[in-house]
Image 1 (cartoon, rainbow, N blue to C red):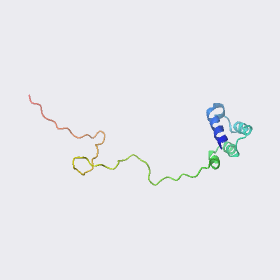
Image 2 (cartoon, helix red, strand yellow; image 1 turned 30 degrees about the vertical axis):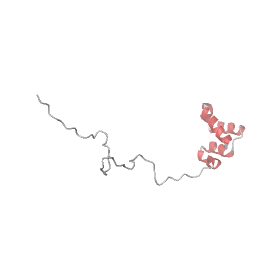
Image 3 (cartoon, rainbow, N blue to C red; image 1 turned 60 degrees about the horizontal axis):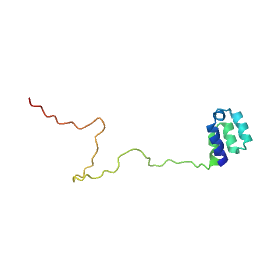
Length: 102
């Protein structure tokens, strides 16, 4: 497997290899004694054929996703147990306006 990773790295770093046709790349991989999985993946144009070689197991999505949200509200030290929610951007509290004396 480490040879496959090294070959993939070499292909990624070399523009000539990266843009080579499947036939050209197959010939190069044959000379480099690449694994059967890598040669098959190149010939088919399907990287999923490397899954078995890398020991890939399907990744199941968790039921709880990590998305931005609010953390548990902590009580303020003012004795008020109501949750404090900051105002949304652009929706600030109105300011009290005091008239100017002339």
